Length: 165
Image 1: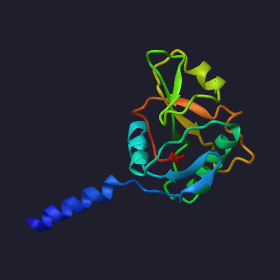
Image 2: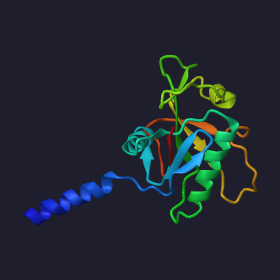
Image 3: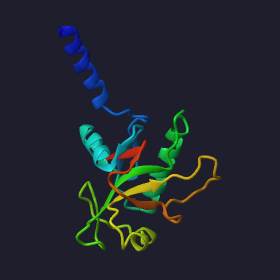
């Protein structure tokens, strides 16, 4: 009986931690890591918090490009790469549809006009970064190509990005 309990406990411990598919990498405004495990946005935020981080916030075109390239670099090594999106920490206030905020509490200081315009009349409150085909020719600038898309928080993808400041 103790063997079954130990096996169950071990199984829970192993499956409670998500797969980190990159090392923590220094970037424009902190350190970043890409995680490769199917999660929804709240689950991804909880996983980031387990590592002393939050879902990535983006405050410059340079930072958007850095995160995009980091995801593409690590996603290419995944045999099960099937995601066109990576979860980041931008949310929309459903009580004030014109108000966006970052889950890390930092200011929403880089506007995403296409995201704001396209999601103004729906109830999608979470945001994913679009990751086009790995075969598209670089350079791809996520800020100038509708790089963030609104999704329901319950939607899942197998890539998310955490950031420590």
